[in-house]
View 1 (cartoon, rainbow over the protein chains, first blue to last red):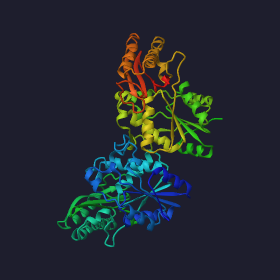
View 2: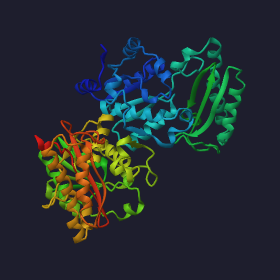
View 3: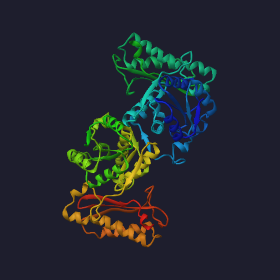
View 4: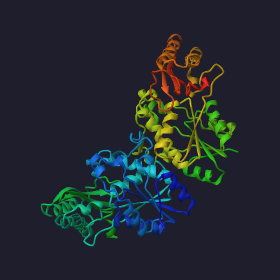
Length: 290
Length: 290
């Protein structure tokens, strides 16, 4: 039987009473099969699996986006139960941020990694994400916390913050859950029209094309992989407006324009498809060379 | 027998093996009787007392100040032993900041409270302080951490950060340790010439004068208390250059210009005395009214 609590303090008490190790999956709700794959991965590693459902106001740039973000707690609890979670934590904003409705004066700043890629168009987003992740990890003290590779930049930033602030938790990245045609699972996919849904596979096709080139030609340059991906996106029809298609150092997410060789390289793409902004990536495009 | 370790990971292992509760006193070394009073207070409350000695480069605005900051580990260990600590933790900069000599990209920002009073002349100082305190608390996981009321703003900021980031630690403020003539103990006092040492009592006298006025006249305004303190500092002779003399809300450190009444008010002063900048305060000037 899944338990649902509405405060972090109560959740910590529940986790302390139960067996270790404990695992945390932090979400903003609107759960889909992608989140469930995080819960499944947590289940395989931990004796207790907790899922937070918290729409974090700090990581929205736009009050309208925050207001219209879907809140579907009942369905989320069912999805958590189905995937094998033990505990759903759905705290109020006041529980997480005691100064609310004033913003918390304390904020975790993540530095340069927060300003590139997704951060370029969302100032403050990753600081807000990091602030809530630190608060959740400190309040709940899980042994493990699992994050999807789908949000590659978020995962890299969480790893950086946990390292820099010495948080005693193991961060586990989980491979992206995909539809049969390769589209990465995302809460945003339901907003795609049938035509846009079809066109959206261009992101995955772009990544696969670059991956195939790298497999054939391990010394290919990052800029050439970027050109491969851009070509796929640009030829995907009028519904697809490419934003970026980049080859990155897999650890630092710094640009990797030169020959790949023995480096560990990530590929990342973003495009607006029929009005919906989508992202996808290969967290380690070099892995399939082995 | 006091134990000395040079890494946070090793310190955590030592603390885990020993009895709870554990208490942390975070210092930058150059220990004096004021620090020892923190250790004594920790000893009275905890089964294990750990003292960190770490000159935190993030909280210096000036590389020269950092370079000339005294490093006296052997004497510090003796002072810790004398005061009853169990463990001294003297980590390297690389141990605390894994990216060193590059600055850690992650930084804890403390908001408005970091920009007033001491923060006005030291941009970034309190963010650097908060960053290392969060790292030390996360790495060492003490049950209690003790900070001196001498650094009133630091204590208020630590309380804010611990609250906002949900760090599972109790913050304990310890009354300022004073010389027989009232001068607050500080590492800087050794830099005072005999004449400046004598003049330096003006800070304590200013606080006492305002306190006496408040005792006589509980409805006095904050601005009147400020005038009392300023008058003492301005009349203390040519060696004393006043910086500020302020009445503050004791919790938020916001200015409290109006009648004191039932409010909890702190008084804080700062002055350069013979070239050495000194601070002092009454964390709760209203307490003696009771």
